Amino acid sequence: MNCEKIQEQLPDVALGVAPLPSEVEAHLRKCSHCTEVLESLRATMTLMDEWETPEPSPYWNTRMQARLREEQQRRPAGWLRWLRRPVLGIAAALCLVAGIGVVHFERSSQNVPIAKVAPPGTAVSDLQYLDKNSALLQDFDVLDYMNGDADWDSIN
Image (cartoon, rainbow, N blue to C red):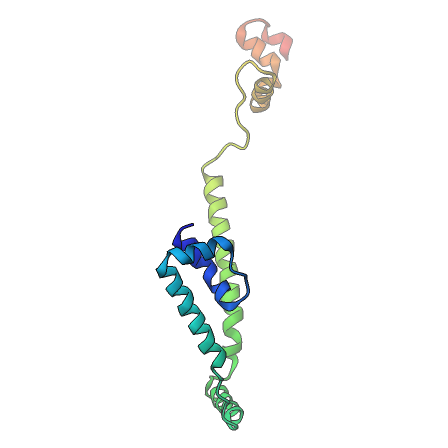
């Protein structure tokens, strides 16, 4: 094992949370650097166990409450403080709506086709052709007259 993998396991070993695996123990016999790191960690843990936290001053809570009251009095009171947060939310919502509107307007102004054009010669392409030219194809008699197949008197 390399030193990096061993040193990842050393804090748990120094705390006594994990037992010392045999491969780590064999590495510690060979590597003096890792042994020094383990001893340093154990010394640090011992010092941390001996350290006692100082007791807070008996007047700490009283002073903290007074400081909080001072800060609350320093804040600007009035309708602007209550209006600030809802205004930011409304502004963000309006920006979102405006952005969606701009994107929709750009897409509709570019005349992006909704459906793709089918390859020619298929039933779908024939239906699309009939749909596009329905006004022209509704009066076949006029088309026949234009081709010379019928005379004008028989149409009227």
